[in-house]
Image 1 (cartoon, rainbow, N blue to C red):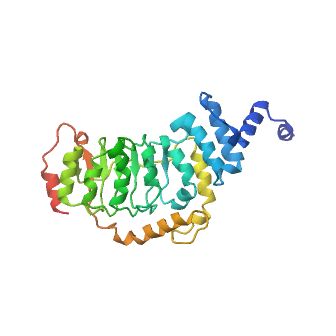
Image 2 (image 1 turned 90 degrees about the horizontal axis):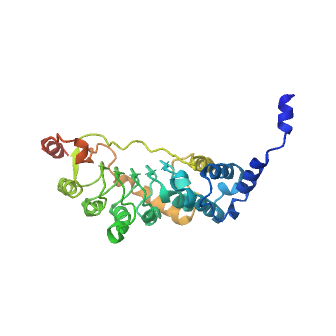
Image 3 (image 1 turned 120 degrees about the vertical axis):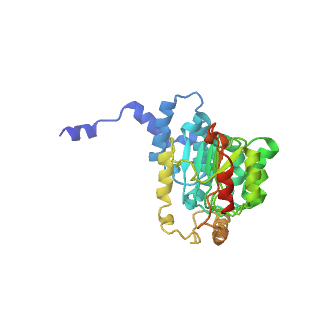
Length: 304
């Protein structure tokens, strides 16, 4: 009886107002200066009560941008999209807005390829500290694109400290470009085609030291207000992600991105993903004051 009475009680004015704003979020002009504790509740209701949250449209990007502009990394601090190419492509425009203040991004096993639009948008990811692009069918061109705004204009993802580029077909050509990351603390190039000589050059340019150990890049998790939103996007794309065959025809994202995925997948056979030596470089500070001689590293390199 008590439950029945409670269910018939009207909602308080505060919650009615929040739901009304969330359902008409596209009409919000600006949230600058608005208390974040209230904005978080509006954003949460927008995710659950507004169809716009899960339908790719101009309003979705505008709404997400409105919150990101006012609350920065509170909306999304870190994100893991490992093996989630379809959801990443489907909501790519909104992701580029969410990534503006993000600090950690994991896009492992997404088969992006060098031509993906992500690399042209990375000039806006100035707060990025940790990036994982393991197993993405990448070649030298992708690194050139990522570092170009840093080398030319001194902007872009120049604050990256932890970078995982393992299991991609990189060559010696990327060494001068990697030197653009002045704050590198850990770099994983395992499974690439980098020569011993170039590894020595990289050690000198970036104050790194090759070590025979696993990468110390901790797992990246999705964190921020947008976590349930990204989960809803994943749920929407779940049926499209049931098969890991990326060549499967998908009508939910552009033909251009579909073609890029297919081209990327076709290059996977050229990537050394098994029996590859660990090529993990760490900043000399990781070794402390009692840095041992280079003999172990040299011996390890000779085994490659």
